[in-house]
Image (tube, rainbow, N blue to C red):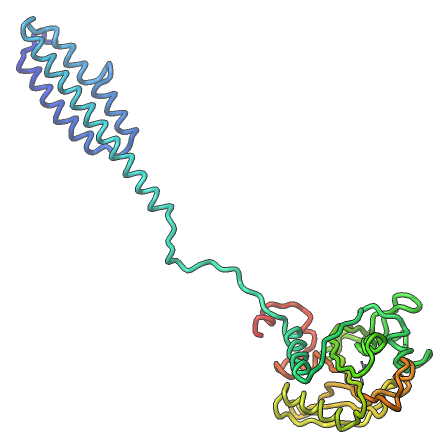
Length: 335
Ligand code: DAH
């Protein structure tokens, strides 16, 4: 180990140290790097301490020169470290802001919007057309008594329409309504003629499930009672409605029978080369009016029951009724 050190050597070392420190600090990329440099340069066992240790070997009058130079260097290095630390921190902040900021021009992630079920929009369309003809909307309960569902509609006990085979009975006198016709009775009980109503709703029958039958389906009931109504009003109303709903599909009235209408008819529209029944209708049977205390020599009227699923299937070209009840979004999204 060399015992002598010259002033020149130590000043050279300090010059070198200054250059090295400036370069290393300028290249430091993080606060941790800078701390490591600080310890290596200014710490107790750092490079500057090394130079100061050697200073003791200089002649006494030369020591202050080195000491002053070393102090200046120390302050310089501290300044550079602080400056670089501030720069590193602001660079890190800028990077974080860039990474975390929102790009407001990105396409939004959306919750897909739902829409009306095709059966509901069919009901709304039917009801809208009748509303335009001056009809009011009425509703009735889905759990009915045999009185409203059958007796008051001129369907006596033991009539085959009451058969256990096709009716859901809840108790001896309660059942899931098999049609919307009971709303006629409920409305007329509380509203004297003249009356014009439509009553949409669910109805239930113990049908086997196939492409054209479902145990739950929908009807819209139509009822008009006034003085002087006859079959031409029924025919005109139904025809005007069908034309508005379907456009120019061929329509035919077929003689039929319902206990609560006389005469009665079924209405078919021609679709895909065959006749498809879309409603039953007729002139309200005088016995039904009498049962409600309405004078059938003064008032007459007509009624109809529309099969909503049929209207929906024809409108949208759907061939299987089950599609309307399975909630398959791939199917429903098409409407
Ligand atoms: N209620 C009957 C059914 O569900 C349909 C019906 C026929 C309703 C004739 C009526 C009508 O209002 O006049 O089969």
